[in-house]
Length: 378
Image 1 (cartoon, helix red, strand yellow):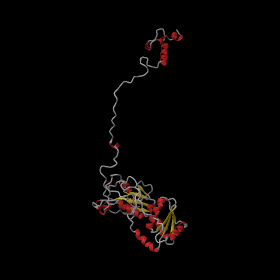
Image 2 (cartoon, one colour; image 1 turned 45 degrees about the vertical axis):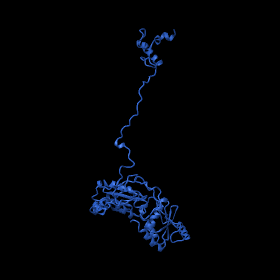
Image 3 (spheres, one colour; image 1 turned 90 degrees about the vertical axis):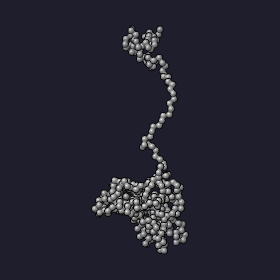
Image 4 (cartoon, one colour; image 1 turned 135 degrees about the vertical axis):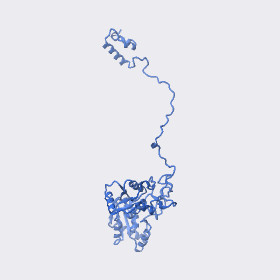
């Protein structure tokens, strides 16, 4: 018999016998034997099974049924059951102040069947530029009618009431403010204005960018499309009043545009040969304009309310004017040139390196250009 067997004879017996200590051993020796046995055999002392558990056979489970969706978790439909209907009497466009019905596109960059209002969400067809209003119904039933508009506006404000509203909304820290950018008065902006009018009598509108070349046009479309009234105008800051009898629960239905539609393709603004000049004379005018000092330097998203007057004043003594638009971008340069062509009026002869070259035209052409510009909305 080895020394271990002589010292620990209980290790030769079954583990079940270890629960009764040997009468010849003390309690400390019995506890030591249990610790040594557990170190060699980590299984349960009362279990004769091997150190693994047999997995009982059970019938296969079927697929777990999905939990019912809550009303707020249900996915939205791409096409609603019924298209939205609006009684507003004007055509829905992306921008109202920066488009002219007299400009006819020569092509489209996307199919006209892709309406920016979404598939089947509006009962007006999209023609690539606007969603035309239906001719049915009475135009006086909505705020676009004169009688309805006057009823909502109510009695004219007194000077004290106007001063109180102006003092409340004219400051730059006013929370009821909408920023108007180079796209002008857009369609979704109408919904933003009515959302502000739910809790405020007026809204502050800050105008920046190309649209500020013609502030009269912006004021006209804001009043015409919203039914409100402008009670304050300071350079590029406007305050639009909702009216005394305005009821937010009776606000008009304004379906939102889900994305910005691609701009149509219009004819070229700058022709190879300016009207009334030969090719050599046009080339000479362009070189003369490029080498002349700039009349003004326009910044990106600036305030251009004085540009038209300065160009008109310069054409009294100059034949060609150059505007430096180094930081405006190519797209804004062309938009500025088109607006100046209609507002001054003048003839753009070159867009190059973000420089605008304007020619005042011959005396015989100025009357024809002015007559051409009278068709644009004012």
